[in-house]
Image 1: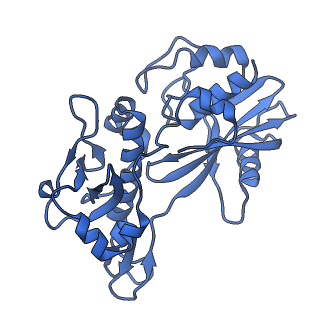
Image 2: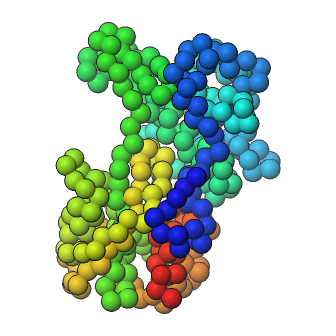
Length: 309
């Protein structure tokens, strides 16, 4: 279960991709005999079309059996669901572009229930990592899955490789009741969101928030607070939602990162959040297009509106 730092966030609804009902069952995945014993007729396989989920007429994820998977496919053990072992097959190719360039992925995000979305997100991150790490980063030799797919071992130098998650700060910046939002060139027209950036080596979360806001908007922030996190499987990031304040007003834009950044009043944010477009790229009637519910920026903005009532 997800436990946000601020109880108020619970009233905004579940955070997308969080709260998976699957038991990761580490004691099974590290035991080859126990794992092998679970690979029987009761085992379930998450059916994927490459990295996209297959969805039934009821809008739920489709599951198959081990018989539905190519015998040569690499399988990863997702864990246990209703005491049944769950697997996913590694596709031939990993991700080749960002999430915003995948309309079918966006459609699936809107359709799946929160538990199914969390299952799919975890599986997607894991099989995508395998598809893109078939060779050793140390010596270039082929690697093979180990520990049920939660590790890859080099066949030559015996190096061990593990699935990675990249930390990203995503932050609200407030100045006297107004919220700073920005838009990247790749965003659909009129779409604004919270500023975000990767945490760099040797940084704390608070330092990353301050650096990113300074680099992208030329503002010095203070009183950085952690709000909540979201696993984001495009390809595999941990979005660290934060809130900060600034005494600065004038924005100095980094045009390499942002196309535009503006201050929005509470009324403008509320109007935009009340009229979020149902499809990516569609245009809502508000003063700007707010992030979709699947994005943690949406949850952060709802939290801010609740906070500033």
